[in-house]
Length: 98
Image 1 (cartoon, rainbow, N blue to C red):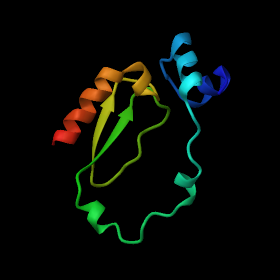
Image 2: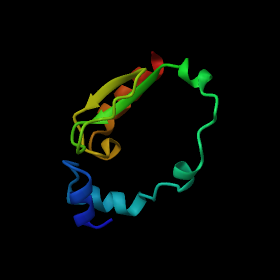
Image 3: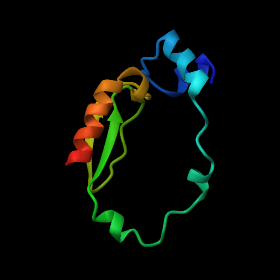
Image 4: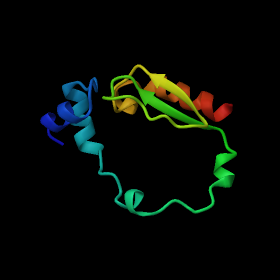
């Protein structure tokens, strides 16, 4: 992705020039199957599990309203694994242990 696309589409992402270089060297596109493959018809087992949505404060727009989800907001841009990895790891660890 060009700097223009990153800056136009991903809000206050907080990526430094070094972060952008790192992302371009390692990032890959979203697998198309995640858009094409339908979810199973029966999600009752999934609906019984605790669910958490991690929103990033720097992303444009409001996070989706997801009934049944706990919402956690990170003070990070669209790629918290790049610009807030320790905070993201703490949140994931806490959620996994709950």
